[in-house]
View (cartoon, helix red, strand yellow):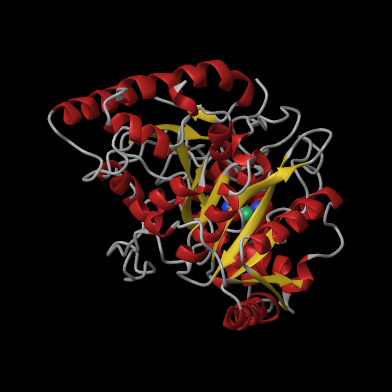
Length: 487
Ligand code: GLN
């Protein structure tokens, strides 16, 4: 079952020519056919194109191509529907893009292709990445492979569900407030959000430009390190990407974390946290101590304001970014008697309820008279939140938290209560507000039903090496990654 392999396992088989890239791609496609009628992770996929890419890899390997030159040669990677892949549909989980086809590759796709990956499929998501359950998709509801009555989390729910059910070897997602880490936690995968500026956003459809980052969902930490190394680096097409050298992330996964200081934020272990999640996190912290890390209490005093701050800044930026979907330039057009009518009919028809709610909120907080009271104040609080973290990182190398306050919740359970849904982001959004990196790694299960729990490690801006090292040491000292969802 080649589709069940991790990147490292598959690459080693491909490099020894024990298997072909075509066979690996074929195994994933067969699993999509088997599992996806139920899971609904893919909005679409182009099997012919995927197999043609795999065949090209096999030719290259036959001609002497190696993984030393191209580290992801022959690895099938699926992509969240918010990242442009030339010639493939780009819908952002929304009806407003109609039959839009990407005219170019995002920088991350160019880089994955240069590394030899086989890019396939469009993964379901909350419309424009707004949500925590993938229920806001304009296409379909993705189901959690561990319990199909439950959501996979969101907004990269398609990415996490596809990886967890072995429909691909790894997937790309985007994270504006937790959208990679939270679904990874709820589906039992590894989810990595790089620091702001680590990875180019060129070709990522913008939700909230000052918070968005592209990252990956994988089966193991080594895989995340390898994909991150490929994705990272400055890009002249994204002026917010930072010219920091890219480390050889996977080489630093030594398993040794002796002497590292890990922070526990007292503000994070409070009400609303599910007792079974708390138990799993406590046990993980003990395990980290056993591995030689020193646990230090830290304080993040502005934690209480993070959700409110995020939902002001994110909606403000979204309202501006989504103005481009006007019925003239992209996708869907609903005709009207004049341009204004065309514009409002198109947006009225094309956008779903959550996107409209956010545009209205965002427009409100930016409007004259309210700008100072909401948007400007939120920006100031954002600085306070960032400073809390920078201060904590003077004492510790990384911060340990739960990824999500609960395990996967039922489909429909929070769908009518946006505030409840927004609170699911409590542990993840601060990282985006502060520009930090974060990773979620499996750390156990609830008992009945058996649902995955995620441990989050937050690192300093450009501190990916450290959080990867800690996550890897923890992962390799436990057996959680070996558990597979039923079916
Ligand atoms: N759940 C958060 C939101 O709805 C985060 C989404 C994201 O990271 N894209 O905005």
